Length: 322
Image (cartoon, rainbow, N blue to C red; front, side, top):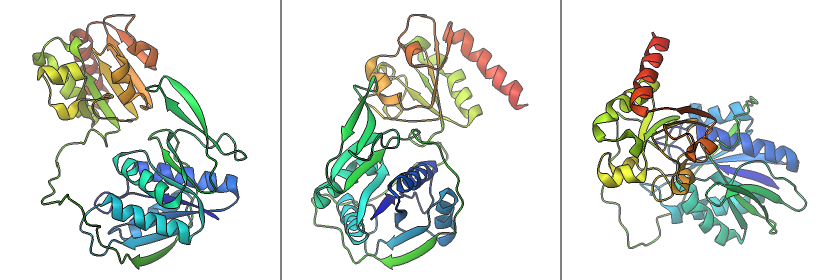
C-alpha cells in the first residue's frame, strides 16, 4: 500500500504547488500508516528532485518520457496508472490545475478508481473515506465518500500549507517505453511567454473591474502589480469592453486562479467572478459600494473610490520598499 503524488514540473523545475502536493501526500500517508512516493515525469535533475525531500518525501520515481517530446495527457495517464498499479497505491494525488484535470479522469478510468476533484483538506474520515471540497462556485462545502479501494484526489491550490520535514529521498530513474497514442491533434510549435509573470502562476494578483471607470485609469493598477512582483487581471466586463486583454479575464468563464494575495479593485463580486478567485488565500477588496458582494468574500476591505485609493496605495508600497 502507498500514497503516490504526481509532481508536475515546469521546464525541469518544481513550483510551490508541487511542494503543497508533497506536504499533503506525506501527511495523508501518515494517517494511512504507509509511505508516500513522489512520481516525476520528464527531464528533472537530481538536485531539483531532492528539493521534494524537504517536505518529507522518502522515495522518488523519476521517469524519462523517452520519445515523447511534450506533455500528452493520454500517454502520461498511462504512465501514472501503470506506476500506481505497480506500487499498489491506494491513494493517488494530483494538482487541481489544467494538467491534473486532464490526467485524473483518464487515470480514474484505467484504475477504476473513485475521483474527488478540488479537495481542500485532509480526509475527514478514513473509514468511510470522506473528503471535503468547495461546491456551488465556492459558496459551500461538500463531503464526498470514495468507496473504491483506490482513490484519486486532486488538491486545490493554496488549500494546504507547506510542511517542512527534511528527508534524504531515494531517487529511482527509468525510461518510459511509451509513445504518444495516435491522435487527431499534432503539436506543431510551442511558444512560451517570457519576461512577465503568468497569471496562473502568480503569488500576487492585482485585478480591476468596471469600477476603474475607463481604461485610462489602469496605470496605477499595473504599477502596483509591478511593485509587488505580481500579475494583472480583470473581470469579464472589462475584457469584453476591450479595456484589457482576454488572457487576463478571471472568473468562471475565464481563468481559475489561487494566488496568496488577490486585490479586487472596482470589482463588485458577481458569483461568476468569485468562482474563479475563491481559492485565493487573502482577498483585499476596494470598492465605493459598501454593500458590494466582494466584501463578503474578502478578508480586508477598503470602501472608497478606486481612482483615489489606488494611487495612495501605490505610494504606500513605494515608501515601504524604500
